Image (cartoon, rainbow, N blue to C red; front, side, top):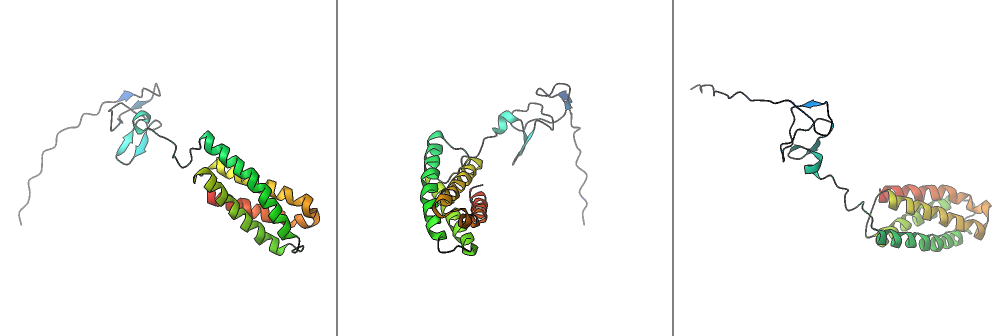
Length: 172
C-alpha cells in the first residue's frame, strides 16, 4: 500500500477589523457576497454561509404580507361573516340549550369562518388574519346573545374559544 506524501499548505492570513455597523467590535468574519466585515450580531446565516444584512435581503414572506386591498376585503368578510354566522349560530343553539353540542357547532362555525377569511384574503396568513378571525368569532358570539339570551349563549363562550383556537391554528 502506497502512502501519499503530505500536501504543503499555505498560511491563511486573517485580518481582524472593526464591524462597520457596530463600532468597537472586532471581527474576522466577512460577508460571503460582498466581503465586508460583519460581527456575529450583524450576520444573517444563509444557505451558503454568513452574509451581511444588505446582501441577505431579509424580507417578510409574501404569505404574511397583507396589502390594504386584501385587508379591506378580509375585514369586510369578517364583518359580514360574523353577522351571518352569529345568526346561524343562534338559530342552531336554540334546540341545544344544555350546551354540550353547542361546543361542536361553535367549533364548526369557527372553522368555516377561517376558511371564509382565507378565500377573502387570497390565502394570506399571519397575525393580521388571526386577529380578524378572532374578532369576527367574538362578534358572531355577541350576536347570538340578544337572539337567544345569555342563559343559552353562555355555552357558546367555550365554543367561541375553540373557534378562536381553530382560527389561530389555521391562519398562523
